[in-house]
Structure formats: structure tokens, C-alpha cells
Image 1 (cartoon, rainbow, N blue to C red):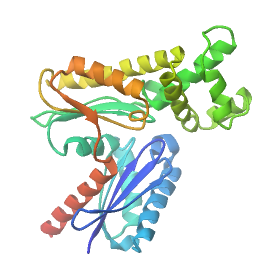
Image 2: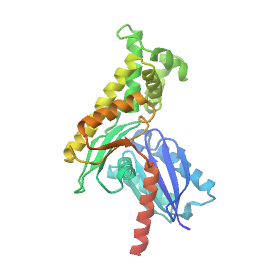
Image 3: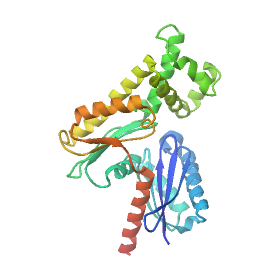
Image 4: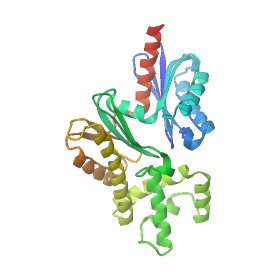
Length: 310
């Protein structure tokens, strides 16, 4: 029996899936963040190792039992990043055919395999990515919190904390978030919070997003305005990709993915309505297959091709 691993490494968490030779999912696990550009290579390697070790232990397997592994990592569209992650996986799984690609590639594979489609991803970061019938691919966004990521959990959380601070300074309207931030999270005061942000903003801002989602569902106007702006930014990314691929007016899957979606009916409904306005023939909906599972299937395919070549 041959076994294959798929890794989806993002800015908040790492998903790992173990497949058998028939393509059946045997185990799943999660680890910490493994986008090396945001969390650093050492932490990324620890997160990947931890998630992989968990599925192997549950199946009573060793690293040498793995014949193929595919990792899709945030930042791995850059060749230097992909190379370093590849070397790590090759050393960790010495008998495996190793493939490293970006997290957006495995998300698109999860959405449409090799066909025409667009995936709109909003997690710790935000990006839209698609492919047309000619194989042309187009990307918009995904440049990190310093140059982009509008509409992401990071961006929403930062906007929410800014709104709370502005209200306390007498510069903005009241919001339900003022009561939730320090009550629901472990930060005792603004001084502690600022220290956490300075140390690791990825561990602060995305965690505020669920509070915004809940407040918006309760009708909090500030939270709804934040999510309205997030929806505009995300739809703008998708609109650019759709236009560049010549898919306006065409039938194609337009898939939502990432942790921002599926947790707030208010935001999901706004995004879907605005996507429908720019792509009225597209089939709009959430991602049904996990990117980590798609990565594992890619690993299985790549290992099969390598075996045939030999």
C-alpha cells in the first residue's frame, strides 16, 4: 500500500490530509501557521511536521511509508520560498515524490481540478485566482498585509480594533465590539493588546474577525460597515480576474474559500449577491473539497507519473 500527504499551509493554520493508493482519505489533522513569509521558516517547518506526524501516528505509519507529498503554501509562488520548503519536505520524507506549489494553486484544484473556474480566497490574507479554457491563469491580491489583503480576516480585525479605539477617543460611533474585544479575548487592556500586535499581528487581528461577524449578525452598524467594505474589496479582486480571463457572461464555477467565509451569513450573502451582479451566469458557492485533500490527490498523481517514467 502506498500513502500520500497533502498540505495546505496558511497564515493561521496548516491542514494535512493522508490518502491511500486508491485516493481515499484516511486521516486529517491541523497544525499551526506555515506561511513561511508570515510566520518564518522555522515555525512553518514545525507546523508542517506536527500536522504530518499526527496523521502518520494515527495510521501507524512512518515517514518512509509516504510515496508522494504536495504542499501548497502561502508565499510559495516565489521560487526561493518553494525551493526551501521543497528541501525541507525532501529531507523529512526521503522516499516521497515532493511537489511544492502555492496555496492558491491547490485551492483552484480543489474548486475545479483542471478546468475553467475562479476561486476567491479570504482567510488570514485575501486573493482571487482563476483559469480560462485556454489555460491562462490570472491572480489578483495576495500581497500580504503591508501591500494588500483587503477583505481578509487580518484586515477586518484591524478595522474593528481601529473602530473601537476611535470610539473610545471620541472620534467614531459606538459599537458592540467595544464590549466584546476585552471580554471575549485574553487581552486585559490596550497596553497588552498593543504589545501582542507588535510581537505577532497575525495572532491578533484574525482572531477579532469572529467578534465582528457575531456583532454584524446582531445588527451592529459599525461591524456591518466593516463587512460591507470587506465585501467590496473581495468582489473587486474576483471582478478583475473574471474580466482578465474573459469570463464575463460565461458559465463557470466561482468558488468562495477560506476562513472568512461560512461563519457569517451577513457577509456571505453580500459577497454572493455582488458576485452574481458581475458574473450572472457563474455558479457561485462555497468550496466543497478541502485544498489539503486536493493537494494530496496532486501528490498521488505526481507520484504515479514519476513511477511510470521510471
